[in-house]
Length: 325
Ligand SMILES: C[S@@+](CC[C@H](N)C(=O)[O-])C[C@H]1O[C@@H](n2cnc3c(N)ncnc32)[C@H](O)[C@@H]1O
Image (cartoon, rainbow, N blue to C red; front, side, top):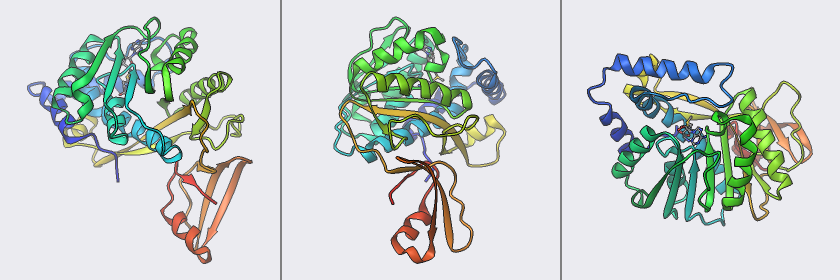
């Protein structure tokens, strides 16, 4: 099933765009895409500058980042089903996208803090929280601050989604260290599924391991990444598009695939998945071929029709899923 922004939030975003011509929103959406695709995407850069661009972000980007964060959080819940997440801090929250994903994944969520420097996004986030039906929405705290100097509110779960890539590279390590210090249970960092996004995730992962964090997902291990140079670990979250979303992007399909890279670490050791599926499984007749990252490095798995339970699991297996031998 594709990920889908909760209806109340989606409707509230689209309602706040009432009266703004679709052409202006489509233009703003194109400007955002171009800004994110620019070679200098990683680094201190503010991509969203106008009301139209914030609305375009809410309509055409937030559904995708919501999907990516939800998928990363589900991977954590899968390997650490015992964790209880009562609070979340969302770093570079935009309109609070990661909080909604956390509320969907962890119904135990009671309180949340969003740290964001853009006043327009904070205003939009407040409006959306009024429309949202999650219990956490009524206790959402907005911290208007720059991540570089902000004191990070401690929480069970800290999330930085698509935000660290907008920070001056010289400042990011300090933010990751403070984010980890603020994480009582887990820290999840999500970046675009590009070579640059993956490289950044690998730097954060190394530093977090040095600080004593335990890798929960996506890696089955805390060793160095076995991928060959030039390759990059990323996944795809299928995301539902509303009709306005489609009109902004000029797309015909009712869905899109959001590519993302991520690392999730925990304070207590967890047993990660024994293997992670790194590509779309190939399914020629009577066999499923899986490219896997395992505790022993990269491995190609073949599951034949005769292998009963494994066959059933392999037929349904998707890129990014955990794989159990
Ligand atoms: C691409 S948006 C991601 C928003 C949200 N996390 C999501 O996943 O949809 C990046 C957000 O990070 C915020 N941001 C970037 N650098 C920041 C900084 N130094 N301090 C606070 N917020 C920052 C931007 O204002 C923007 O709202």
